[in-house]
Image 1 (cartoon, rainbow, N blue to C red):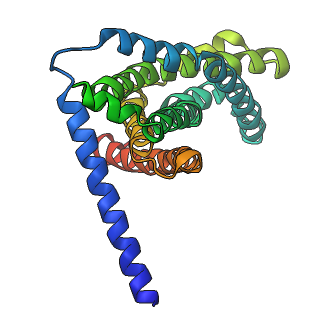
Image 2 (cartoon, one colour; image 1 turned 180 degrees about the vertical axis):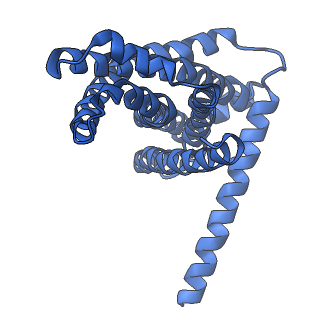
Length: 259
């Protein structure tokens, strides 16, 4: 019985991966095909990008401030409190900024995509679109993927900037450090591999959270309860994949650039 259960679970997992690859491939193949649905692209960009601004700004600011306080307390033990800016900028740009921003956007938008598309599936709106000759993957999935990748890229940059400024505010006001010294160490020590790592990650993360959210939304079954399950699965799976992908990117960048 246990072997049958394991076998069934394995088959279900392989089938899910296959369906995910097919859905993602079909959606991406529609990017350069007419019609382009520019209105849907801008609408999703507004929902995903502009709608996520408050949570990204607040999260980045307080994370930068908390990081400055924690790192300064540790660095003071070694007489190196002046390097607080360097540690904050490294941490925000290379790791905390991209990962936390992706997780925040995933919790807000991957769940939203799954619930919205899942509701359309269970109310047979997707079937109605197909009957009218409209490809749901091009109309619904492709704009969400493109908009998420583009907007998460800029949201991550914004989170990095706000985090560094938040850390600087804490360092100057609460810790009594020099503002010019903090900013000098924050940007002077950054190198090309550091910026490249911080800018590559949101592209992968945005693709993951958009495709996972759309995938679970499009395969929703079981009415309103199914919508709830799809929403939960989308957030959980996208968050795990984001963290796992972050590990892979870090290992690759260390192997290529050594930092």
